[in-house]
Image 1 (cartoon, helix red, strand yellow):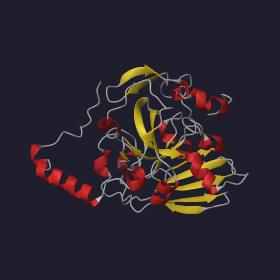
Image 2: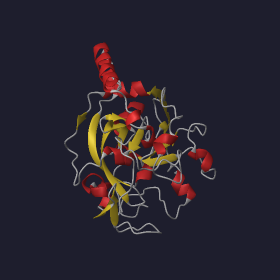
Image 3: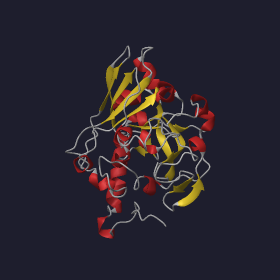
Image 4: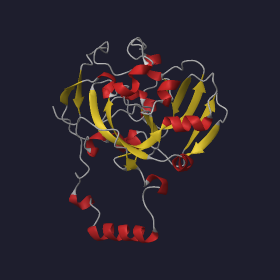
Length: 301
């Protein structure tokens, strides 16, 4: 079954911008030295250390089919239309907790402090669908080092923005303990794979994909890659996570991708690549075993 997601070029002819207007706008921007991307986001080069065993997912599919419960807890398509009121500028991230240098950084601060790179990552949802995306960002470890966590800091907690008036799904799912919250063990947060992400496909993150800043933790199920982050907190004990709090039997703190560990309601041995839903065997740790296996004993859940 092929998922029907409207493609970017699908519009009525009368809705298209006239060619002369489009070309004139580009010329004006170029002459003024302006761009739709901030200056710090224009120099991201691809890190060739990360390669894929599959084609990159088409952009229209990766931006048109995903989970963002704050926009709609019951659908994966049409989320962009629900995000029009979501304001992502200005934006700041508070860094707090057990660290020597607590601080609040706005997005430009973050972009200027850390060099961006593009990485091709496999991405796997707990619901079995998967994609392959070129993400733009920088290792979370760089941000952690900036804050100088204390020796007692063993975990990192993350919190998503809390704006029910801008994110309609928050009012739909009233039983959820909003705002969304997640966590990683310190060694997971420091792992070189863990990416603070500000873009995809060479562009800033779309709102429905977690703009303006999110995590991508590619060896874990997608819900661990928290979106629209406003707070990072260092803690001495394992922080609660939203899905674990809602249903601890189905969603553990670690949530590492493991084809031999089924979800209570379905097997995880097979994944389905969007948009065609082609079936492929699920890879242990999503194929990143060489980077992360040494962190685990096999008993983590």
